[in-house]
Image (cartoon, rainbow, N blue to C red):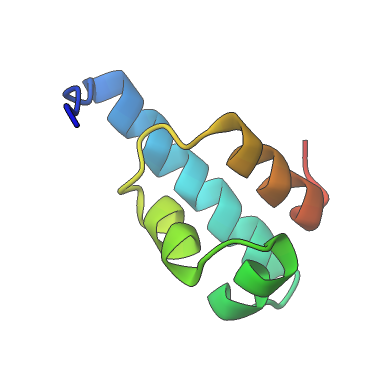
Length: 72
C-alpha cells in the first residue's frame, strides 16, 4: 500500500481536529477508553486522532465521533 505524503495543511487540520475531539471528550468527563466504547471505535483510533497522528481520518469515523460527542 502506497502512502501519500501529508501536506502541511493536512497535518495542521489533523492537529486541530485532535484538539477539538480531546476538548469535547474531556468536557463530557470521559476518558479515552470511555469514548472508544461509546463511539464503537478502537482506543488506538481515539489516541491517534487526539494526538494529531491522523491528518485526515475517514468521514464515517468523524461522523461517529461527532455524534457521540454531540458536536457538529
